[in-house]
Image 1 (cartoon, rainbow, N blue to C red):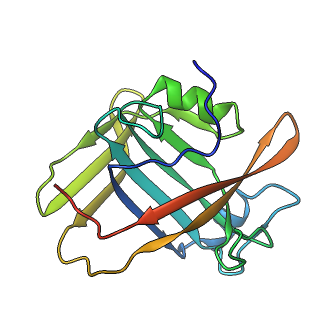
Image 2 (image 1 turned 30 degrees about the vertical axis):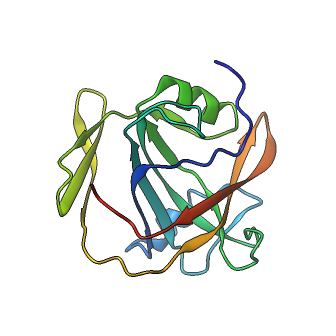
Length: 178
């Protein structure tokens, strides 16, 4: 694999990103390693996206991924508002992306998916092993408004016992499902 420069900005992807407060907050706290602190309400995040075409600027080619984990206190992104995040699960369809992510401390594993369409409603079943569904997400597309959301996210990882902090830029303009 050619060496890619962190952080990568992914464009032209179909994406759903959201967070929630889980029913079992202590189960979330148990996923956070010593030295990091989960948010008081134990909120978690999940991002799923599909890159259909191997276009720049990412340099990764086409792939899909799902990642999930707890938000962190005292590890904020550069805006001092957006919490840092700890990846607990990271499923990716591309060996190249998994290698890149794993070398930076991300718990990257093979994660093929089933993409159920591109109309006003789209869904994903993330599967591991021999097609065992582990996550199902459905989104309905409609009027997205005129808001532009942009900023930077901070993810904390660990490589060889050393904590790393990665800052990842994002910009979401009116979301379109084509």
